[in-house]
Length: 340
Image (cartoon, rainbow, N blue to C red):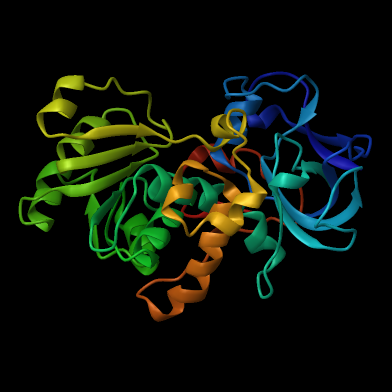
């Protein structure tokens, strides 16, 4: 099979397209014939050797995929060859075939295309887990989204609106903000030209935001923290601009909380992908039983109900590449949505 291969740690420009053996589905896994795969910022970090996990060289990058089940390993139930699926992967999505844990593989809903599904799982599950299960967003609250035109940022805007929040989108250019507003944001802030804290306070009558969704970090974190009102929660989901230092005294002073949310770290810990929990996801007692099965069920409900709300759950694409020439697109950060 063809695959985008990383032979040594470095830039995505050093990746090559070559031949690799078709992987086999181990017990509990499915083999997927890939139809569409998104390119995430995390892919560039992984091939540089700086990601949370470090595969053995050589390997193919790609943290999610969508396609058709080609084979099932021993012990797999609920999936069969021929099923249209999306999956979260350890790596390997940038290839013609990929293996995925069955517990992290989901049947694609009717009406969703392979490109949409290929760009759905990481952005929407990551955002929903952070906002719903960590941030505990409630209808009527104000959600501030940094990096609001990126993959997870746009997902956060849409999910926040579908959950009944007032969403303030923040980004670095008017063009990016226009994309976020087009996906449901109620207000926008250009933090390359405007003072973030002052604008948030002006937009909330001095109350501040209830939750800040932050995939950016860096110097912007300080202003974002100051933008929170009493009891506000800042959700740390990425550090594109650098890892901030959290001043504990400022959390204490206004009863604020800083909460981390990492899909991959949670998966390696507490049986994160808990399929049986899907039947318990409506119970408040099940909130501690975090699982992307619950999240996928919740997002499916959001997709069904968002048509009557002021938003929709609709993955956005900057560009679709039918070939293998993605290379430096992901690290340039000049676009909105996803590369698929």
